[in-house]
Image (cartoon, rainbow, N blue to C red; front, top):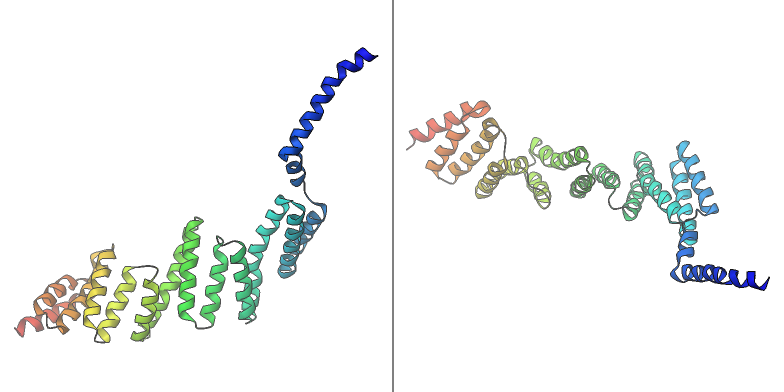
Length: 281
């Protein structure tokens, strides 16, 4: 009997030593921390049920509660899943408030979602739509441009294109309405973040209309440097450049630019200007 006991003791001591090592290293604690917390899981499932019924605001609050409980219990898995639903639901809730004209609450939820996950583009898109509805064009442009940046980082290239088009649209709309000072102010906001041939062209045209001919030249040159389209796409830019040269009494340069502009829709106008300038010299 004693002989048998003495043989078992070394094995028992090995088990105790291994357990002590796991506890010291946090191995058992780490294992237990990964186990789903019952209360957090129940709240999480409650959130899923509310989500199915499209009760987005209640679902959001329940997911936030689930996350809080899970984090306190060390249940990282449930907390992560609950947070993932929560920042997405901030967009849905924000859109609901926006539709009801409650812009303050809409922005509050979009900002909450951004704080939770800055890499989710939809909450920036939601903010941009609110600012647009409020006629806060500068803030809307900045939010659309930010939407494009975040969408690019997450591989949503179509959304990037849509967001950038929305931002650029504020400049184009001002030009269409012949609000040339607004073209310049909106264009300057856009150019703080992005440069496109179209925006520089809009600003060249507006600058010519406002009598700021050197600015028109500068924007026309930048537009030409960025324009990768056909000769027809460049003709309108050359025309604005020619107009600026003409008004600065730089007639030879104007003739050269009108010659470049004499194509497509601008052919007749450019050729007329060439005749007038040639006859006056």
